[in-house]
Image 1 (spheres, rainbow, N blue to C red):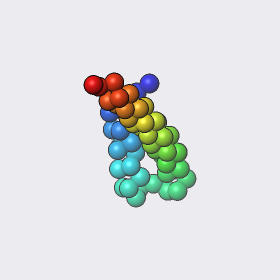
Image 2 (image 1 turned 180 degrees about the horizontal axis):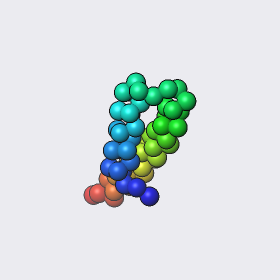
Image 3 (image 1 turned 90 degrees about the vertical axis):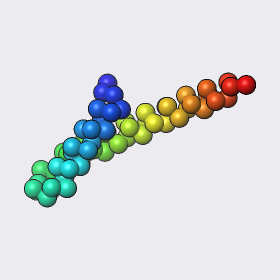
Image 4 (image 1 turned 120 degrees about the vertical axis):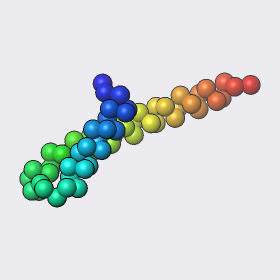
Length: 61
């Protein structure tokens, strides 16, 4: 699995590509779908990190 940073960078590249306006709708669709998958994965990673932080914070005296 790619790291959060790697996925963020890939998402950024996809978004720049989509925003360039050089793609037809048919060409853009696979990029859009990949971006959606990356966003979902990044959100899950952030939620997991948030849960870990909460657990650690509860354990503090």
